Image (cartoon, rainbow, N blue to C red; front, side, top):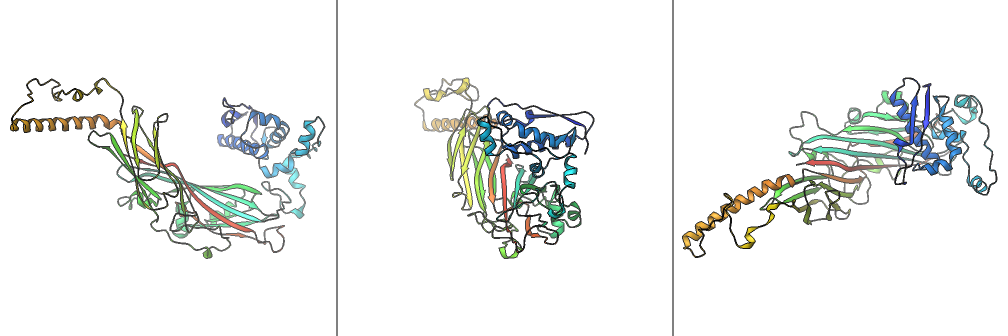
Length: 504
């Protein structure tokens, strides 16, 4: 595709010197109007290719030391303003990467291997020169790939983003999924990955929204048969597909909906303005060990998958497989208003909690062992408000002020009759209740307004998507060898990075 792109590359190191900011690393100027997403995608491809060839993070010193490789990559990826070759596997056949011997000879001042001149005609001409014996020319896969151990791995990761109202109803519930594929197989394999979800074909179409695919995926096959991914994979690890799942209920089920129907491993509730003066708040974390509607899936029902294959099942938190999902890295983050001086007397029934004054948050961490047993964990804290002129307590000096009028009662006598003492006690009790009510109202703005939960669950997906099979089409594959049966494995992982937020 010709886009008349003039690329200007600027490499800067950030102040800390630890890594380079990608937004300041590369800039791209177009000579005429082009699609903005085309430019952004090209910049992302440059970053990915640089990290693939010279390693990450991208530092200015690392780029300068690998200038010969960077120059070749830029020339191949954008030639005379035309973006042509951005696939790492195809670039490995065209870019000469110095080995350890070349670096050793260059360090002592001796010339290394002289890079060979690339044939004219660009990528299209090189693909035409590919011998027919090696199979079809595929830009994203290197030619003559050989592996001693043939392996295929599928890793599905879902990241949760859930917001729950104080009433318990979900305001938004999304799961962003990505399918990472690792191919270590010789020749040119043609693979078929089959996905499924509860509800069959219609359930899968409803579950997977806004899918995006690697260029190797045949879109016509997906349109005809949703759930089937037919592709010739690149060599190594790559991102096969991405999708979005809406976990929100339908309008008819919204009335009877709660956070438990979201099938989350944890749920959280917050009670604030507790205690006589309203300075306490309590967080209740419910840890579940079962999911409504989940069914146990045996490995024998998954054709073509090895012992790593897994599906959605009843979680028994342990080793982290489909038959026993493991809840790990569980911690709760509670933002505290900036006006709060400190949070004291943190009492957690499980795990440990501490207040980070620099970030104004309370962190509550529960170990995997403590989270293995289902039940409810509680955390109760006391806040310390800001200093003010009225913090001195006259009660310490033995004086009793009238909280309603603010005047000193000089008519009080230490020796009174029993009736007067009871009336006095009743009046003091009413004044104390009035003071406590005012303190609760004053401390209300100091209470937290939300709490977020972070965790990871191995062996379970919130969307219910699972891998039914991973097969090799031997008729369309080439160069596999006779009797080759690659090892196949599947892993599921659900992650919440402060993704479940409960408001109060």
